[in-house]
Structure formats: C-alpha cells, structure tokens
Image (tube, rainbow, N blue to C red):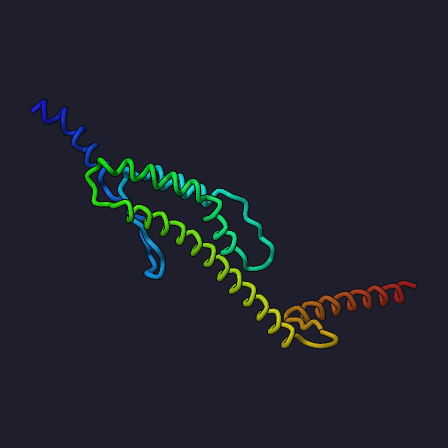
Length: 180
C-alpha cells in the first residue's frame, strides 16, 4: 500500500510528458495544432518570437504583411526549436515524426499569418462601415438653417412663466398707479 502511494506520483509524471496539448478552435475555419507536452517549451519559445514585436498601425491594412515578415525574422528560432523538439522526441513514447514536427511549426507560422489577415479584415470592415455611415449621414442631414424643435411641455412652461411674470409686472404697475 505504501509502495503504491510512493510510486503513483512517478507514474503520473511519466504520463504527463506524453499528454497532448491542443489549441482548441471554436470556429471550424480557424487552425488548431496538437503536440506532445514535452515540446511545449519549444513551441512557446517560437510563438513568443512571432508575437513579441512592434506593430506599426499606419491606417491601412498591412498587418498580414507584418505577421508574414515575422516568419522570416524568427526562422533561426524555428530551426532551433525543430531540432530541439526532434531531439527530445527521439527517446519519448510518441508517434510524432520529424516531418510532423516540421509541419507543426509550419502550421504555427500559418496561424500567425492568418491572425494578421483576420486583423486586416476587421480593419477593412470597420473602415468601410464608418465610411458608409458617414456617407449616409451626409446624404440625409438637413441642408441650410436648422431650427430647434422644442417639446410642447417646454413651450408651455416658458409661456406660463412669461405670463406669470407679465401678470406680476401688471399688478405692480397698477399698485404704483393707485398708490400715487
């Protein structure tokens, strides 16, 4: 019994090295990748290289090009990550071949470029929506002098206040006239 308690963490740790890590996709048009947990540090390092950079927002849709440039910028990091992954997986109990590891890192790069493309599409959609709203407003806005239309209750309140003030002024004038 005691032996089983002592050995169970060891077996759990061995199994953890072989479990697959998946990036879930909620939309069937998006990418997903699966890889053994053993190579997670190499995948994270390559993804960090792709993501951690300065983006230039210039008012035009060029984020896909910027994301594609990250692939060439991180080529050395990718090669190192593939080599380290293959080295680690050589003695592991996994069915991931070196060609599949290469495909995995290629897909990570394609996902990165697809994110840039998606940002460009969002930008284009928002700009065209704003332009259509502006054109619609310009087409339907009133031309020339715009009069302020007031609610009837506001007009009545002002009329009543003016009438009360006029009545008070008339009463004061009558009192002055009678008092002389």
